Image (cartoon, one colour):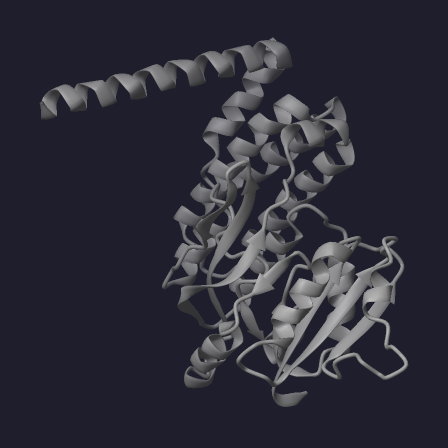
Length: 339
């Protein structure tokens, strides 16, 4: 390990049009003591040509390119960790970019607070639209592990996106690497395990990275690929297991996870095949009674078994429609009262 060095690990797969921007944003940091490790997960779009050294040796000495046969982003990140020499670790998705002062600001926090295992920050999502780029801030600041954990396992997305934290490499090496059996939600599962293991953490109140949105997973996409449904279910099971292994977690964390589980179950009712749906229901019946929460999802599972999936979906649509009418009614009442 080289003191002060930051290892930026960029896994990529067929992102030739974006990965150079990610690498340039890492090399161009105001904090210059960096190494950038690009791990190509079996790309077929000639990504390798971008990182080929020409006859004059024109490839930045701080950048290394590693090729592996396709094994997934988690496996690529683990390969990057094996080759990392830094005191600090920054994971960066290949279609995202770091703002110029990200590493400098976060290293300053970690150096002033030796007990902190990582420091995270806000980010910005950039979404292409008919009217041009639309940007909005992502991330959620929390002062305690309990509140951060409740937020991470809840329904809100991008509480701590992959590129948000800067980690101490010593802390990362003390914990198990990325779970290579996961694809969807692998970053969330990794963050849950490491936040549970952390002694303390910091936050920089600035948006220090840009996440490019090109269209994520949708229910229709998952319905066409039951492997994605199975992966999403497996991720939730792994997160649930990690929470059970966590020390001193309070009830609000499990309540938040139960709400996420309920939302996921409704989604799985719409897209999962019979085998995947029954697998998730079986896990819920085993997991939630032990936590003292999750009663709603257990009730829905019981109703689904009695009336069937199609009738259950019609029932849920009716409930959601009535709930919308009630909310609109409350809004109208408040407006009349104010007048």
